[in-house]
Amino acid sequence: VHDYDNLRVALEHLQATGRVAHAVRLCGALGWFWEEAGYVDEGAACISQVLPLAEDEDPPIAARLFLAAACNKALSEQGDYGHRALEIYRRVGDRLGMARAMAVLGSHRMFDRIPLARQRRLMEDALAIYEEENRPWDEAMVILQLGFLAHFSGDGAAALQFADRAAERFTELGDDYCLAVAMEAQAGCLHHSDVDAAIRLQEQANAKMAVSGPPGEVAFGISQIAEMRLDANEPDKAIPLFNQAATLYRRLGDQRERVVSVAFIGLAHRAAGRLDDARATFGAAIDLSMLHYPDALIWILECVAGLAAHMGDGLTATRLLGAAESYREERQQPMFWWDHFRYDPDVEMAQAGTDAEAFEEAW
Image (tube, rainbow, N blue to C red):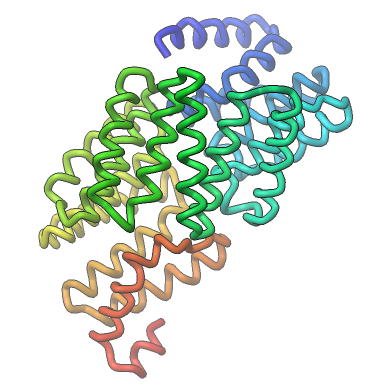
């Protein structure tokens, strides 16, 4: 991270002097860094400039750039870059390249676009290649991602087992940063069953991340513990943490995660009973979402619906819930099991504040 200014200058120089091939190579190499360090929007802008030129490069160079695009949250929805990379690696017979592409396609970044069963198969195939090629660090990363997939599917026991295995591997490898990521995964597995234990584990992960982690992961860890504090009925402890995360994301240019953090501040104000503050904060989150992260509008509308229900306006709450559901279907955005912890009580409150006929009509 400390050398990034030099890399930024180098990339600008390559583009300014017309050294396209070198710019394509550097963007491909920086793809993972941009994502993990939190420079998502900057990375998307740089990759977008050279993507049209990728087909003119050697296939492995093009494939690496496509993987960089697939890893970028701001770009991955705009094209099937991961599959394009996998096709190239298969064509040239690059087994490690195939494993890298499978690992990207099977990762948590793609959970809303690729069926979970297929993601598991991709990850298992990637793991088999890494085991054959004796790549212990890559094996550990795939094991960690298999845990994320188990978590998304609601299998908490399997998710925790994978996270524990990954933590053991990273401890053996002496990788404190990835160990911190695995500890975050362990904390996430405990979030809805033992929130106090999850907070303790997340605090340990954050302490490691503060020493060895990139800024984007530091911000993520702060937002995670803030969400846990909120779910532990400590909204006034959660708000400064969400504010800290939002500030970090803004500095990094990761506007999508900033939107999420601001919306969570609204939820924390609602939980603390400061309904006017919650309404103003949700308004700011909607404005940011329209600019930077339209899909987040679904969840924010559901949050505002919950606020309306808390304020005794069941009819408005129901209309907002109906609008959010329609937008969710239009955007093909899934609702996961953890979403129901907040969503279901808000629906029940809206329904309780509206007679049955008006509820059906408004929805």
